[in-house]
Length: 445
Image (tube, rainbow, N blue to C red; front, side, top):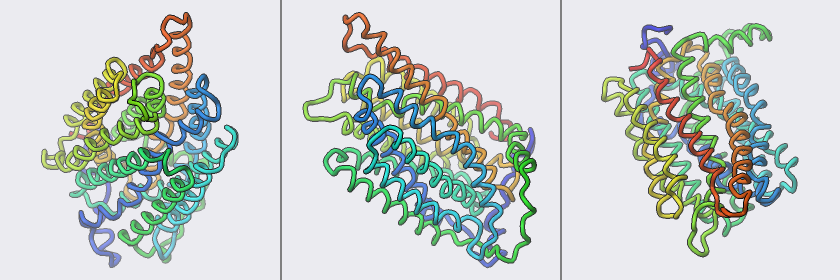
């Protein structure tokens, strides 16, 4: 609601679904519904933190590895920016006896799984890598956009905080599992890893579809013919809601901070951290993320529920979480030159990260403008998660490579980490800015 009633949001799912003969949603079922969120986080963690940086560094060499990662991730983002809201609109318009979401989620999961396996096992050039990555992103949209709408459909208002906490915990558990596999990635190899990732995706999607039965939509009135002008107006419409626009903006800036450094953390372990003998950068970054996600799971599980217990007070938790992440981010690159010190600092970062994710999704549910267009509105919000890959990651890659060359230019500082200091401090600035701007969301306490 524009600058006003924060109770306007999703029509309680228990009322909508019960009217169609579907049992009301419970916390235990919400946990199973989030199987897809777990699987998606598991796969994307392995891809973005471990596999993509390692494979691209091997393809292009040390001098251009940062720019190569930025280019591959950046080139796929325009497709995701267009595809995300289109997939959301398409999901809202589906009229099937199986509902609106599952008819797209199933083929999306199968396509996602096939592209994951191909990306992990087949590419021999940067061009081929980029093509497969674009295909993977598009297939993921057919899974993730309807899933976001499904969550909005089935979550009653009184469970929004708990649902947000469950989603945060599922994401972090997926990341945790990805980190555990990442520790063994160089041992088990890409083929087994890719097959395991594909299997997890398909299995988790089946679990979600079983746990979240949808009402029969086949007898519903057909949607009005889709026109380009009205489609564009519909996509812009949620951003005219001031609170939704601020939630969108703060999450976009937050993701700018994440994507400025996330894909380069493995490189920092390669170039700036004194690793024990026999420890590879892939293993080290996985250990670091295990520590981060262990602490994040704890705060994610309790963050959403705690905000409900505090009578919907969400902003104070965001302020604490954002400040913790910003300080930890700076400390990692300034004092984290040993494996032990980086593990401690990443653990501190995780405490803030888990809490932020849990509360952030609750804020989105609080301010959704139109219950009937939940998937489309959530897809518009998801642009805030994908656009930073086109902006922050390529920029971070160029800054990293450029300032690393500057730091080592005179030959007197062969161990310089100037490039990493620049991108990590920039990331901390984004995190602080997103935290401060949350105060502008009037419909959230």
